[in-house]
Image (cartoon, rainbow, N blue to C red; front, side, top):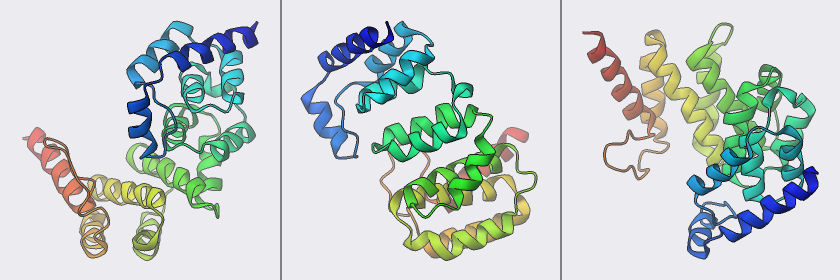
Length: 225
């Protein structure tokens, strides 16, 4: 039954393909041409369905995998499942949704954070840094923030792009959440200049860590008055 439904979903996704959107997405490494609002509507109609999610993931189709991540039950995946899925995630959007929508809700999140942070594949390691950023922001107990800052200081400038983003997020969250580390985080960001010239739309906060840190801290301080 799941197989026939999966085939119908794949047909529906193919019908939603827009060549212009595919061309735009492919510039970012995402090989699909479907408006994400329409893709989410497909997932909403399907509702939560773990068996179908597994079937769609196995289709090795980026749009189908995005739907799978929206309809799956994160707690049902083993650590081995999630590790395999991350390594299979070629498209950046699949990688991001897997980490944010599934792994962060998994009982294996800390095990995977530690394993991925130490992985030799920079794309896999970037997932470890994304999960570390979540820890810094929400449950920093037990983290060695000085050691994280030292590693960022040593490696972020020359790291591959996706890994840079993960490290930069940790740097910013340390600076935002921990006043005692703020001066060091700002100094590292200013000196390394990672993402300093990143194009930022109006009314959005720059990902450049010093700007990001100062902006969010000023908002927090203003709201506390």
